[in-house]
Image 1 (cartoon, rainbow, N blue to C red):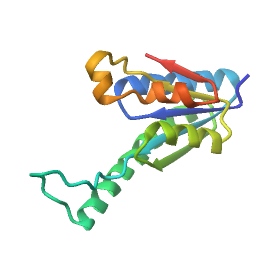
Image 2 (image 1 turned 60 degrees about the vertical axis):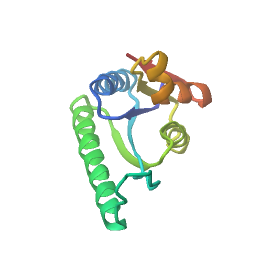
Image 3 (image 1 turned 90 degrees about the vertical axis):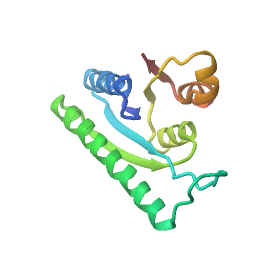
Image 4 (image 1 turned 180 degrees about the vertical axis):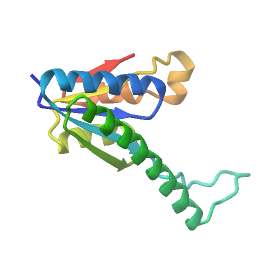
Length: 147
């Protein structure tokens, strides 16, 4: 059925449920799991009234985000190993999460993308956007959305 499943995580509770489901699916199919965490770049636009950060401080923040991502991915690798699932963990830096997920899935030759949907509606969806919706709309690889 599936040979390589990419699961995208943001570390949220809902995302953790999607990861658990992706691990179970990979175990059932005998598929490899690719765990992906997209780390944003620190916004460098300066708004009126904000305190501009130094390049060193921005670098420190981005490093902290990357280290946090590695901890999250290590936990996924451990859980997958416990189920006998071969796992590859990758961190990608990008300002556009949906594009990074699709690009990683193509690069890793995934035949399924698994991700969570927070189910935002109305103004929250308009303001916060929907990365899941963007992946669904633009991916040529099948997408399994869990809630």
